Structures are given as C-alpha cells and as structure tokens.
Length: 251
Image (cartoon, rainbow, N blue to C red; front, top):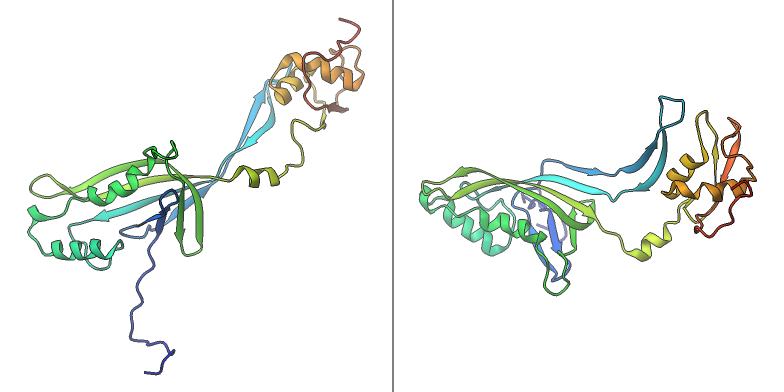
C-alpha cells in the first residue's frame, strides 16, 4: 500500500458528537449519535385590543435565543466498540457486552455525564457553558432541560438502557450582541400607521410598556386632542422619555 493513498478496505470510525464543558475543557462523547436534531428560534409579539375592532394589533417586542433539541440514546446491555466515549469506557463496555444480565453496567454512569451539566459550577456560580460539535454543527450554549427515560433493566432492577431528551439554549457574548444593531430600537424614533380604533395610549402601551407615556407621543406629533386621530396617517413614536416630559396644554 502506498503511503498517503487511502485504503478502501479500511473502515473509518464514525465521528461522534462531542459536548465540551468550556469551564474545565472536559469533553463528553455521546454513546450513539442522534438520529436527528432540531434548531429553533422565535420572536415575541404583544397584542393590544383595538377600540371598536375585534382584531388586536400586534407589536414586536424582542427576539429569542436559538435552541438546539435532540434525543440521545444510551445502552449498556448490547453496547460494544461501536459506541463513543473514552478508551476506558469502550473497554468496560466490551467487557460487559458478553456478561450475564445481572452484571450489565448501570447506564446512569453515562447519562449522568450529560444530566449533571445543569449543576451549578462552584467556581463560576452558574451551570457550565457548553460547546456542541458534530460535523458541520457548531453550537454554543447552556443545557436548559434534560429528561431521562429508562426503558430496560437487568434482573436486579438496574437500568441498562435510556434515552435523554435534551435542550440547549444559545449563549452569545454581550460584545457580539452589541454589534448586532437592529434597524429600530426603543431609543430611536419610529413611525406607525394609524388604524381605526387606535389611540395614543395603545401606541404608548405597545411601544414603551406604559400607557401613561401617550403625552410624549402627543407632543412629538403636535396633537391637541388625543381622541381625534386621522385613520391612515403616520404617527411618530419618539425615543422613550421620562415622566418629566412637558404636558400638553389641554391638561
């Protein structure tokens, strides 16, 4: 065989998903790769009832962190050298693969490595930050939910097969978040179209979270009567101000 030429008869080991604890740099390899995983991201909107209308108006509030969800399978009853983990893990599993049922290894020895990633770290006072790597998947975040289901037991009642339903939530450094400047934010002026049933206090509640700030909107748009808004017109929503703003002359 020539050096540097791949051997077609050589079986390449299957790459295992790796979860790295970034606090202590310890790596955890899953026993079996997941059949699938789900990445999800959402956005939160608030609803405000429109006057004389059955349809509420919606207003974007904020986005949400991305989540990564998957099911992980663990088995110490039939496990052999195809599973992941350290060399020591593989040797132990190989040694117990042909052992009688009562001697099968407790599967919780392996599920606990992931289940315990939600425990608060003594040095940082928070659960560890994790990095999940598998092929093109690169995800950094915290384990926020983990559910264990044991589905097989030996004659002594020791669990030897389990599935974990895990959810990771994305973590992003504050400096990186600061670089992601939105097109509009509460500290910049916005413009909205007035629909039938809209009122200044409903705009104020959706934008500032305080209906009392309608006076700020009235001042910015030189509105003398807050009850008379022209449907279809544009209204300016200034940067959120304090209650010390000037009060319109009609009050």
